[in-house]
Length: 250
Ligand code: F6R
Image (cartoon, rainbow, N blue to C red):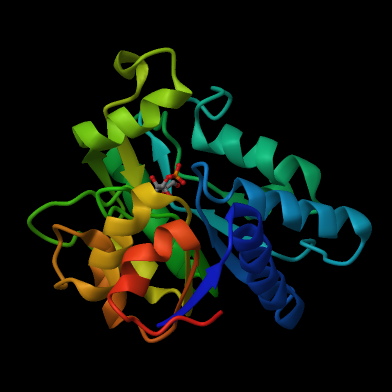
């Protein structure tokens, strides 16, 4: 694992965008695994700026998103498809047909999960998979549980995730209770994983992911077994790792 420390959210976003753009420049038709949530918004803003300036093209890029709320249409303003459109896809030169997010409205969610796994496999898995980190250590919506689930699956969101995401909805009652999420298999099959984290409320999860035991109770801890993981965090998110003397660049 390589861990980069940046002084704040903006610097973290810029560093993450740099790493993603390096991948796109190196391999213009790469497959990017993408995440939603508050953490990647600045990264997507930076990528959009470079694209609009003409410094970076997504013309040949294919994307696979990690997850989607079950029961939300892609047009719902809290769906992850809508998030991706408004924070990235609508503003860059990507071909919309080359962007993929699980269908939260699929009549048969299990079949949709199987379709999604086949799709990601048919694309050859992500060249670079961007991940945020849940305060409970989740990646995608792989919540803490008693086993790592390999396949894309329907998951019951934990109370802490529902609470954390309630800020985007009128109330916690409006937060969907289930999601479709890529499993650990597709995430670990990515050639490179880029995990970004910002803020003191991620410090414990990040510490457990990097230094704790590899356990499905902290799903991100599985990344210790991946051979190419880059973590970019701001000072607050990395504080506990720094205190523990973990080697950090920057
Ligand atoms: C979203 C996702 C989640 C988020 C995580 C952190 O696609 O996969 O794992 O990355 O919940 O969310 P924020 O960035 O809002 O703290």
